[in-house]
Amino acid sequence: MISSLKNNRLLLSKRNFLDGRSGSFDKVRKTKLTFVAVTSEELKAQKKEIVKSARRQRIQSTVITSLVIGLVLLGMFYLNTIYTDHVGEVQHKIALRRKKEFNKYIKEGDIFYAKEQWKNTNFFYKRALTIFPENQEVLEKIQNSYKNRCCNLGLDCNKLVR
Image (tube, rainbow, N blue to C red; front, side, top):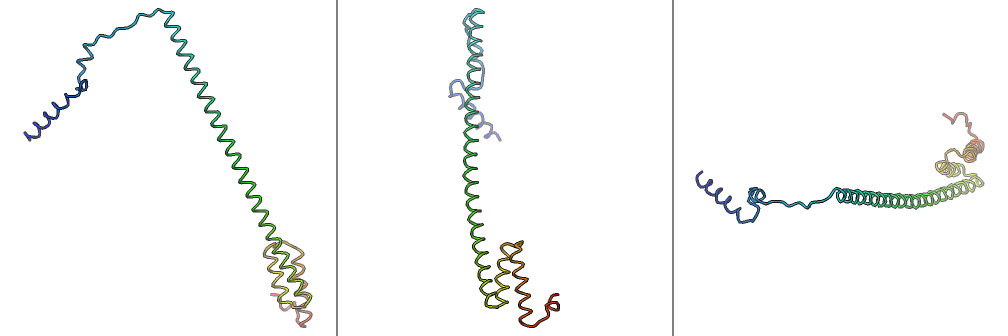
């Protein structure tokens, strides 16, 4: 216990080697401050200068902030335009690909319809229906294909429908 107190005192004494950082305000109390005598007109002029410079800095910061915000908004608009154009192109390509695939299935179904291969006809028409489910043309073709299948095979279609 005694050795730790000694060590603490030694540490405190080592801190005094830094000039002016001893932690006491003795030097400050001894220092006398001298102020320049200024007239009231000079004080008003200095006050006006300070107000002018503060106003100038406010205006500069406002202009810079406005420019930065404007550039950011412009950049966002530009990127949004590019993204929207890209999305539009991709959607257009997908729509074209779907239409092409739809037409291919319809064409294949028509070929099998002409050959009176009803199962294959229905298969391709149903594939086309998965691409565009609300297409009335395909629904009519499927209906005609089932009707012709029943007629050619001599089946009663009303019994087949569940």
